[in-house]
Image 1 (cartoon, rainbow, N blue to C red):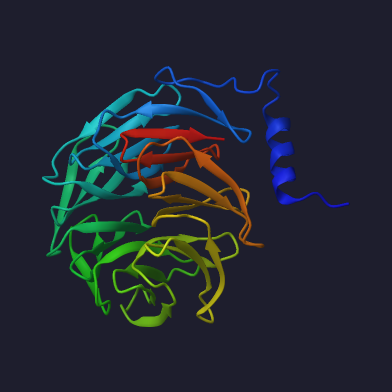
Image 2 (image 1 turned 90 degrees about the horizontal axis):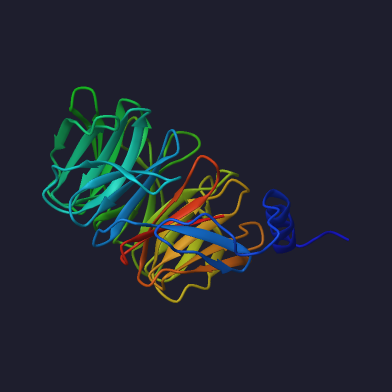
Length: 320
């Protein structure tokens, strides 16, 4: 008899983590807990909130904060290695360009490019007339930015030149993703997802179905696109046909973050203070991860497959 997906996940976790006593885990900040077979450790950022997260090479993690800084963390020790200061408003978006460069988007309407080894600001990209809420790296020298001004821009991060401006949404852009074929997807306050030709700026497809604005996007292992919304749902789209193949319902507040996991499942972070893990083949919620005391704003997947969630409570939780 075939085992269910939750049972498979539980057995795999036990095989990979043969602990004699459940609940034993690494501790950062003197914090340890146990929930549904999942244990985590906490990094206390001492910031007002964590608005963006992204994994960096060599076991590091970058976080953006409402205080206008970007910080780089050692995920094994919880130590803050670097603080990037320069933005004059909150940092809402991060994108890795190369092993040594990171881009940040801010409510101050600019994008900055940083050296992640030294903390030096290499470049400031100015042109948006509203806050930059989302970023997506197209290559080491090409970056897409989405703004509250309703446009998306593509930049050459070597020269600082704006190469293309995409217009079409009737509201601010809140989400970006690079599809498996190189096209760009954007989510907006206008409740839609649009698919764009990244070379010409042409809008190829509009995905409609959400009843409130689209706050997060993620590309799944099979090439489908997931969108998280203020309407409390996650939708899964076939971008070749524009059809919504599945709606994942369960969160009781807006879904602000999505992250595909290495086993093909999808994690979603919500303002209901939880993270949920979904089987995107069946639509079943496999796990609900509880621990944050405020909104979950951001998710990131580390190189070893662990999930990190960032919250308005000022902490980052690391999950198996």
